[in-house]
Image (cartoon, rainbow, N blue to C red; front, side, top):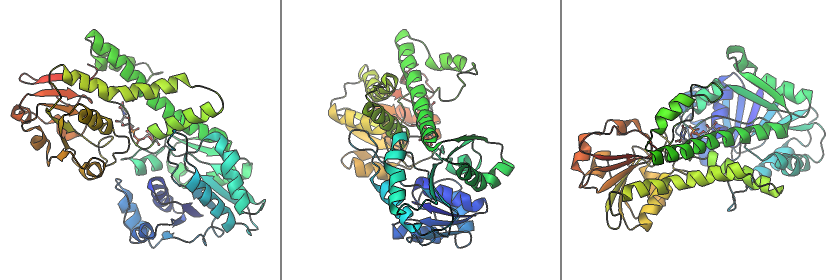
Length: 428
Ligand code: UDX
């Protein structure tokens, strides 16, 4: 098949490279000439394991990048993978996606065969009918050959390529049998080798599945953090409790790690967007609101634990970990951001370290100190907060002996407590 992918951001680049790897001819379309050039050179605009290899193999062969929409009408299906950032009130900003949807419609306005436009971006269910379908049809000037479908993406940063190539499930949201069949044809090479569940549904339900999935996982972590905070108050170990409840198949052992909370580009954006969309319908989603509230509280709780041992005014505090999770330099909604803000409010002198995410954080907080290693950050510090569970933090040991006062508050259960350090786990 010939597939056009509009948008070469995180999701767009990954799916374009993976579709090429499945054997399709792919045209990746982006307005950013620099990204187009990077892709055509076989390089990756983002850091993601396995992605550069795929681009190197397929660029110039099955994968071509361009700024022009000319290939759209010649293709069999078009995927829209444009970012949907948050407005200030948490609601979804569809501006860029709506413009791309209309431009895609314009490109296929004269097409005589049927054409499927698939939304890959995460969009709220009502916006499919009220904003995106109208945008495509407006662009296509009412051409009845054009159908809009929805195929949400569940890939995680750091394992995006393998998540795409071996998914648990594929969700096909289409409004006709033809649309469903076309999505089957796109994923057929993957399904030949891989036994994934295929969910066939309508576009709005497909979009709700994505929100429910992310909201469920974010809420699971917040619930675990709520229970973990209670464990800590009782002097109990939340990890021992969660290991036991994880034995129940209905709960599963995954996503039970309590700590400083969830961040990243998806959970915060999607939970806030579905809350805002629910409020639009005059429904207050109490559990989801609490999910966000518990997440917002965890960095503050860490500092309260630190304050039991150190007066934060003027104290030198090492922040270990800036990325929102290990194996990425992404700091979007990282818990390190509220942590640094809270420490600044308390008048602490901050020294931060991360194996890969120092540069983006320097842009955000140019006025704090950054260390070249965890050891340097700890040297002379009055206390430390561990925010990201990088493996290298697990091997820290005598580095703690160089601290002025060796107080460690661990937000990810990554440090081994031992004699000679004052250790506080956030929920254990
Ligand atoms: C997530 C979803 O997993 C993915 O399906 C969706 O497409 C995009 O959002 P991602 O943001 O890459 O993926 O990260 P993920 O690995 O899910 O972790 C999210 C956050 O939860 C991280 O900040 C992580 O530290 C935190 N987390 C995860 C916990 O605090 N405890 C856990 O047990 C698991």
